[in-house]
Length: 360
Image (cartoon, rainbow, N blue to C red; front, side, top):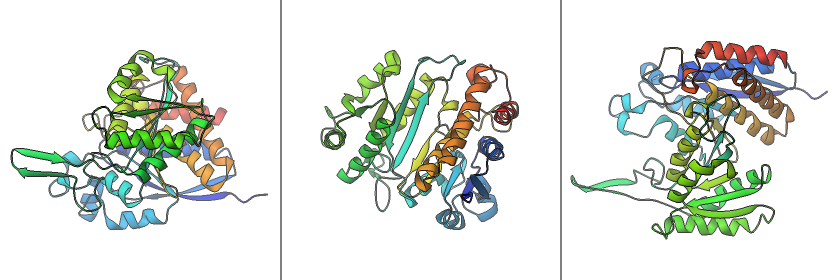
């Protein structure tokens, strides 16, 4: 009999609703673990954000980053860096620092409408594959320093970086993912205006497409694509794009699928992965017990699927399927939080999911 896979997973609550939704995901995973013997998880709590400022004197402590080095993966809550005191408010966010340290170049963001919810596009089931290290984002696109600068107080400029290497590796992620889905990739760009930067992104993705003859490929300008998603978002499978476009499109598709509160997200490299929901910290509802934990729960399921591939252990994928089925069942039964039009609290929803898992 094969020994259980022993995983070490970090738990970083983050800010705002993070201390509510991250423990919710851990509780759901623990419920799924209880029914099997193939996988065991040792959780390690680590401070980040406001908690870390209070305990360690900074939002992204070196001790936390060093602990992540030896973990298999981790779950990160949202950050509310706008509320940090200076100098940290103006520095790299905790999530950005982690992504940069571990070169988490692929940001995979599914958007799937859930049965029983009032989605704008009821049959939407797509994935935005976002290049996570370059583009116009100042906290990620320069080797040293910021990509933004102000020659005068009245003139601000930004440098957008696009490299062939980054385009190639994210394109491969997108095409491999499409092979496991419905076999279609749409490349989002703005090459009619940003001809050298997003033009390079488009062209490299088209070159990589030649290695995947079983996958259909097309490309669209980002503005036209956004309009098409609203009208017929259910016709798309995998969308691959650069950093900023991917951030915007994934928020759009999350809402079209029902709510940003159900939009999961996985950040990964070839060796490390981090589950972090697409939504923010929502400080206005923090502590009220009404936050939607679905995005973080489903992000954690994505993390388990990534671990299944890395360790060649189907048991992790089975855990993910159990969690996803339970979430779908509970929502279909009409139990969901206020952002989806329901009246369930965070705790009520999680309890319904864990009870459902026990019956599966």
